[in-house]
Length: 249
Image (tube, rainbow, N blue to C red):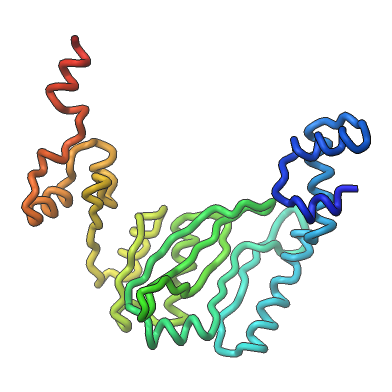
């Protein structure tokens, strides 16, 4: 009895379904009952996550068959809970992404990751750049178990295997210092220089010291002086005489 409502109102909350059941059938359901019913209805409509993950290897094989120059593979690991290997990571890069990045895009690469809101969890890692029209261009993406040194290392290894190294291509990496990413880049590409990005209006530096202390870090001071700005003007108001007077008045 949920099927049509799930399809037509997939964003409806459990509270809304409870009201609908009460109105239509005069039934009082608990939240846990409604959550389980909604999950079963969504699985019937959208399909099972477990069955979808079981077909990922077929997806990679089909992609490589239809688009031979693409890169698509997954990593599995053994588990004590089941005999079959379980999914760990997946990397995908289409031929067009690979070709257009190397031939037409600017050599500035943005790295980031985000949480996936699904039953299996995990994180989506991705690499983007800018094309000749100054528009965002996705280069590749990967699904990993978590954001850590090991997963970032695997992701960047897979990236360089697909399109070459930064030294060969003259890339510039942009990131907000995700877990393990900066350390890995330093170790993997020791010949590269590491620069710090400042957000003067946000009063931030990617070293995070400015935001944590409220006092411009050494990188910020250099940037402010070069921009003919007084670093003292960018110290947080909590250090001002006026704030001290308010605190002790």
